[in-house]
Length: 243
Image (tube, rainbow, N blue to C red; front, side):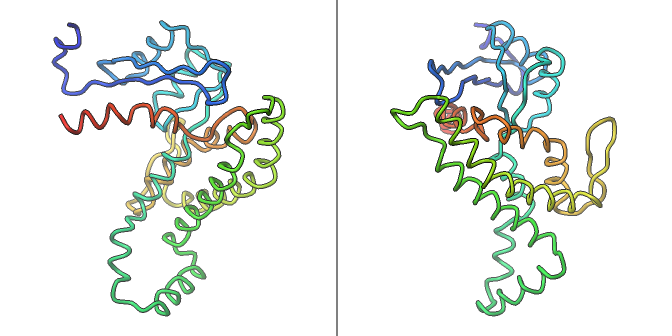
Protein backbone atom coordinates (compact mmCIF):
# COMPACT_ATOMS: atom_id res chain seq x y z
CA UNK A 1 0.00 0.00 0.00
CA UNK A 2 2.90 2.36 0.69
CA UNK A 3 3.87 2.12 -2.97
CA UNK A 4 0.33 3.05 -4.05
CA UNK A 5 0.29 6.03 -1.69
CA UNK A 6 3.56 7.41 -3.10
CA UNK A 7 2.82 10.66 -4.96
CA UNK A 8 6.40 11.24 -6.19
CA UNK A 9 6.79 11.73 -9.91
CA UNK A 10 9.41 8.99 -10.05
CA UNK A 11 10.22 5.83 -8.15
CA UNK A 12 12.96 3.27 -8.54
CA UNK A 13 13.88 -0.39 -8.21
CA UNK A 14 17.30 -1.26 -6.85
CA UNK A 15 18.48 -4.66 -8.09
CA UNK A 16 21.24 -6.48 -6.20
CA UNK A 17 23.07 -9.55 -7.45
CA UNK A 18 26.42 -11.33 -7.19
CA UNK A 19 28.91 -12.61 -9.76
CA UNK A 20 27.83 -15.40 -12.10
CA UNK A 21 30.59 -17.75 -10.90
CA UNK A 22 29.48 -17.42 -7.25
CA UNK A 23 28.72 -20.63 -5.36
CA UNK A 24 25.26 -19.34 -4.38
CA UNK A 25 24.02 -16.82 -6.99
CA UNK A 26 21.17 -14.52 -5.89
CA UNK A 27 19.09 -11.68 -7.24
CA UNK A 28 16.86 -9.32 -5.27
CA UNK A 29 14.69 -6.34 -6.19
CA UNK A 30 13.91 -3.43 -3.86
CA UNK A 31 11.41 -0.62 -4.41
CA UNK A 32 12.68 2.87 -3.52
CA UNK A 33 10.95 6.25 -3.49
CA UNK A 34 14.25 8.03 -4.05
CA UNK A 35 17.60 7.22 -5.65
CA UNK A 36 19.52 9.11 -2.99
CA UNK A 37 22.61 7.69 -1.32
CA UNK A 38 20.62 7.47 1.92
CA UNK A 39 17.90 5.29 0.37
CA UNK A 40 20.42 3.05 -1.39
CA UNK A 41 22.35 2.60 1.83
CA UNK A 42 19.16 1.77 3.77
CA UNK A 43 18.39 -1.10 1.38
CA UNK A 44 21.94 -2.42 1.40
CA UNK A 45 22.26 -2.19 5.20
CA UNK A 46 18.82 -3.63 5.93
CA UNK A 47 19.59 -6.79 3.99
CA UNK A 48 23.15 -7.22 5.26
CA UNK A 49 24.68 -6.74 1.81
CA UNK A 50 28.38 -6.20 2.56
CA UNK A 51 30.37 -7.00 -0.59
CA UNK A 52 34.13 -7.11 -1.05
CA UNK A 53 33.56 -5.17 -4.26
CA UNK A 54 30.52 -3.23 -5.45
CA UNK A 55 29.97 -3.17 -9.24
CA UNK A 56 27.67 -0.35 -10.30
CA UNK A 57 26.80 2.07 -13.06
CA UNK A 58 28.28 5.56 -12.97
CA UNK A 59 25.64 7.09 -10.70
CA UNK A 60 27.37 9.46 -8.26
CA UNK A 61 25.60 8.12 -5.14
CA UNK A 62 27.46 4.79 -5.13
CA UNK A 63 30.91 6.20 -4.25
CA UNK A 64 29.23 8.12 -1.41
CA UNK A 65 27.58 4.95 -0.11
CA UNK A 66 30.90 3.12 -0.17
CA UNK A 67 32.83 5.97 1.45
CA UNK A 68 30.34 6.53 4.24
CA UNK A 69 29.25 2.99 5.06
CA UNK A 70 31.54 0.43 3.39
CA UNK A 71 35.06 1.86 3.67
CA UNK A 72 36.78 -1.47 2.95
CA UNK A 73 34.66 -2.23 -0.13
CA UNK A 74 36.23 -1.84 -3.58
CA UNK A 75 34.35 -0.27 -6.47
CA UNK A 76 34.13 -1.31 -10.13
CA UNK A 77 32.26 1.02 -12.48
CA UNK A 78 30.53 -0.54 -15.47
CA UNK A 79 32.42 -0.38 -18.78
CA UNK A 80 29.18 -0.67 -20.76
CA UNK A 81 27.83 2.53 -19.21
CA UNK A 82 31.09 4.28 -20.05
CA UNK A 83 30.80 3.07 -23.64
CA UNK A 84 27.29 4.56 -23.83
CA UNK A 85 28.76 7.94 -22.90
CA UNK A 86 31.17 7.69 -25.83
CA UNK A 87 28.29 6.85 -28.20
CA UNK A 88 26.34 9.86 -26.92
CA UNK A 89 29.32 12.13 -27.48
CA UNK A 90 29.89 10.89 -31.02
CA UNK A 91 26.23 11.08 -32.12
CA UNK A 92 26.90 8.42 -34.75
CA UNK A 93 23.63 9.06 -36.58
CA UNK A 94 24.72 12.64 -37.26
CA UNK A 95 28.19 11.46 -38.24
CA UNK A 96 26.83 8.92 -40.74
CA UNK A 97 24.65 11.64 -42.21
CA UNK A 98 27.78 13.63 -43.01
CA UNK A 99 29.26 10.64 -44.84
CA UNK A 100 26.23 9.62 -46.87
CA UNK A 101 27.28 11.56 -50.00
CA UNK A 102 30.98 10.64 -49.80
CA UNK A 103 32.70 7.81 -51.63
CA UNK A 104 34.63 5.12 -49.75
CA UNK A 105 37.89 6.76 -50.77
CA UNK A 106 36.73 10.15 -49.55
CA UNK A 107 35.70 8.65 -46.20
CA UNK A 108 39.11 6.97 -45.87
CA UNK A 109 40.82 10.27 -46.69
CA UNK A 110 38.68 12.04 -44.07
CA UNK A 111 39.71 9.63 -41.33
CA UNK A 112 43.34 9.66 -42.42
CA UNK A 113 43.54 13.46 -42.34
CA UNK A 114 41.62 13.85 -39.11
CA UNK A 115 43.66 11.16 -37.36
CA UNK A 116 46.86 13.04 -38.08
CA UNK A 117 45.29 16.18 -36.59
CA UNK A 118 44.32 14.45 -33.34
CA UNK A 119 40.65 15.06 -34.11
CA UNK A 120 38.39 14.33 -31.06
CA UNK A 121 35.90 12.33 -33.16
CA UNK A 122 38.65 10.01 -34.37
CA UNK A 123 40.07 9.70 -30.86
CA UNK A 124 36.67 8.79 -29.44
CA UNK A 125 36.21 6.20 -32.17
CA UNK A 126 39.59 4.75 -31.23
CA UNK A 127 38.28 4.43 -27.65
CA UNK A 128 35.27 2.48 -28.96
CA UNK A 129 37.61 0.24 -30.94
CA UNK A 130 39.69 -0.34 -27.82
CA UNK A 131 36.62 -1.22 -25.75
CA UNK A 132 35.53 -3.65 -28.46
CA UNK A 133 38.90 -5.40 -28.23
CA UNK A 134 38.68 -5.46 -24.45
CA UNK A 135 35.32 -7.23 -24.63
CA UNK A 136 36.62 -9.70 -27.18
CA UNK A 137 39.30 -10.79 -24.70
CA UNK A 138 37.00 -10.53 -21.68
CA UNK A 139 34.35 -12.73 -23.30
CA UNK A 140 36.97 -15.36 -24.06
CA UNK A 141 37.57 -15.93 -20.34
CA UNK A 142 34.38 -14.77 -18.67
CA UNK A 143 32.66 -18.17 -18.51
CA UNK A 144 33.95 -20.63 -15.94
CA UNK A 145 34.50 -24.12 -17.37
CA UNK A 146 32.45 -26.92 -15.83
CA UNK A 147 35.44 -28.78 -14.34
CA UNK A 148 37.47 -25.68 -13.51
CA UNK A 149 38.11 -24.71 -9.89
CA UNK A 150 37.63 -21.10 -8.83
CA UNK A 151 41.39 -20.80 -8.36
CA UNK A 152 42.07 -22.04 -11.89
CA UNK A 153 39.40 -19.73 -13.30
CA UNK A 154 40.88 -16.70 -11.52
CA UNK A 155 44.40 -17.55 -12.69
CA UNK A 156 43.23 -17.79 -16.30
CA UNK A 157 41.30 -14.51 -16.13
CA UNK A 158 44.19 -12.71 -14.42
CA UNK A 159 46.64 -13.79 -17.13
CA UNK A 160 44.47 -12.51 -19.99
CA UNK A 161 43.63 -9.26 -18.25
CA UNK A 162 47.27 -8.56 -17.44
CA UNK A 163 48.65 -9.37 -20.89
CA UNK A 164 45.79 -8.37 -23.21
CA UNK A 165 43.29 -6.10 -21.50
CA UNK A 166 45.44 -3.83 -19.32
CA UNK A 167 47.41 -2.42 -22.30
CA UNK A 168 44.12 -1.60 -24.02
CA UNK A 169 42.75 0.08 -20.89
CA UNK A 170 45.99 2.07 -20.64
CA UNK A 171 45.45 3.24 -24.22
CA UNK A 172 41.88 4.29 -23.45
CA UNK A 173 43.17 6.14 -20.39
CA UNK A 174 45.77 8.03 -22.44
CA UNK A 175 43.20 9.16 -25.00
CA UNK A 176 40.56 10.19 -22.47
CA UNK A 177 43.02 12.15 -20.32
CA UNK A 178 44.22 13.94 -23.42
CA UNK A 179 40.67 14.89 -24.41
CA UNK A 180 39.83 15.89 -20.84
CA UNK A 181 42.80 18.22 -20.43
CA UNK A 182 41.03 21.21 -22.02
CA UNK A 183 37.39 20.30 -21.38
CA UNK A 184 37.25 19.41 -17.65
CA UNK A 185 38.35 20.93 -14.38
CA UNK A 186 38.42 19.70 -10.80
CA UNK A 187 35.99 21.38 -8.40
CA UNK A 188 35.19 20.16 -4.91
CA UNK A 189 36.84 16.81 -5.53
CA UNK A 190 34.92 16.06 -8.74
CA UNK A 191 35.48 16.87 -12.39
CA UNK A 192 33.07 19.22 -14.14
CA UNK A 193 32.71 20.46 -17.72
CA UNK A 194 34.81 23.36 -18.92
CA UNK A 195 33.55 24.75 -22.19
CA UNK A 196 30.94 23.36 -24.57
CA UNK A 197 32.88 20.75 -26.55
CA UNK A 198 30.66 17.85 -27.61
CA UNK A 199 33.03 15.36 -25.99
CA UNK A 200 33.24 17.18 -22.63
CA UNK A 201 30.46 15.21 -20.89
CA UNK A 202 32.10 11.89 -21.79
CA UNK A 203 35.40 13.18 -20.42
CA UNK A 204 33.77 14.31 -17.16
CA UNK A 205 32.18 10.86 -16.82
CA UNK A 206 35.50 9.11 -17.43
CA UNK A 207 37.61 11.28 -15.13
CA UNK A 208 35.15 10.88 -12.25
CA UNK A 209 35.01 7.10 -12.77
CA UNK A 210 38.63 6.57 -13.85
CA UNK A 211 39.93 4.44 -10.97
CA UNK A 212 36.66 2.52 -10.61
CA UNK A 213 36.63 1.63 -14.31
CA UNK A 214 39.98 -0.17 -13.85
CA UNK A 215 39.33 -2.06 -10.60
CA UNK A 216 38.60 -5.35 -12.40
CA UNK A 217 42.18 -5.45 -13.72
CA UNK A 218 43.47 -6.17 -10.22
CA UNK A 219 40.82 -8.69 -9.16
CA UNK A 220 39.94 -11.60 -11.48
CA UNK A 221 36.76 -12.34 -9.53
CA UNK A 222 35.25 -8.99 -10.52
CA UNK A 223 33.25 -8.56 -13.76
CA UNK A 224 33.90 -5.37 -15.70
CA UNK A 225 30.22 -4.47 -16.09
CA UNK A 226 26.75 -4.75 -14.55
CA UNK A 227 25.31 -6.95 -17.31
CA UNK A 228 23.90 -9.48 -14.82
CA UNK A 229 21.69 -6.80 -13.28
CA UNK A 230 20.95 -5.17 -16.64
CA UNK A 231 19.51 -8.47 -17.89
CA UNK A 232 17.60 -8.94 -14.63
CA UNK A 233 15.82 -5.58 -14.83
CA UNK A 234 15.03 -5.84 -18.55
CA UNK A 235 11.58 -7.45 -17.97
CA UNK A 236 10.69 -4.60 -15.60
CA UNK A 237 11.71 -1.94 -18.11
CA UNK A 238 9.69 -3.66 -20.84
CA UNK A 239 6.60 -3.73 -18.62
CA UNK A 240 7.13 -0.07 -17.75
CA UNK A 241 7.44 0.88 -21.40
CA UNK A 242 4.31 -1.08 -22.38
CA UNK A 243 2.35 0.43 -19.49
